[in-house]
Image (cartoon, rainbow, N blue to C red):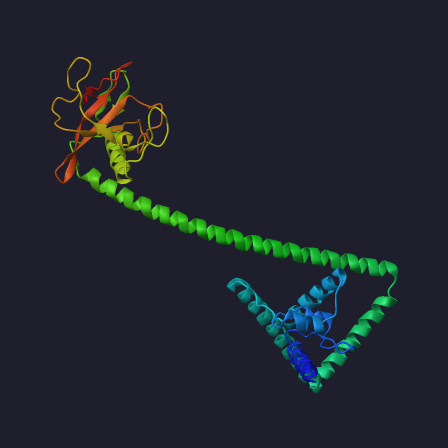
Length: 340
């Protein structure tokens, strides 16, 4: 009697455990035994009780039991939220868009219903429907030739409208590009104006400039005027105002600091040991002189002339140290004096 009571108590306990949502497993079989599905998860009772309550199982039955346990537990598990923060944010934005779209559709429907109840709106709809029916009847009454002619006219009108839109857009874009270009040009002119103003100031502060009618004849027989000298001096100041950027005379590439224009003139002795400018002390600035040009050479190879103007810093201003030229086939600098 006591053994039967114990057996019933254990059975009742197992029923309570395996009837929970976590397991969701069957409890007793028709014969009064605990089902094989429940027996596979009984780990807290003795082997003797298991043998007395649980039926024997085969390999196939055990596989089915294991699969049923996994499926049961999977159903009882709470769904997992997206793992990363980015996934949660994307899902939340998607839900918000869906809700906004639904709200917008609801508002549109509500507005439509309110308009439908408006007598003026209803009268307008009726008029539109009547006009549409009239146009359709008139179209159906036309011959095939008339329909084709009208269709061709409509196509031509649409093509003209599209062409006008393209022309208007092109004009607007060109206008915008023109404004951008004009703005850039204005800035460049303003910057060049400042540089020119600085060059003019330095030119006016330069002493020793020759008469515009003075004449200079180089060892190679080329003739320059005093105006050419003055123009080259102004070009030297303008190049200096721009930062002295020029080109390497040998490679044609953008120059380095040592090759910049105007470049340094160190008044080194010529091949005969004499100084090009005997009365000059210290370094000067060398700049190419051209005939009738406004600003002079930019340093590209080959140098267009053999003549150079040499200027020096002189207190608050500058002075013309002299005019030099290269003899034919020589790198020497020979001073050139004005003849009048």
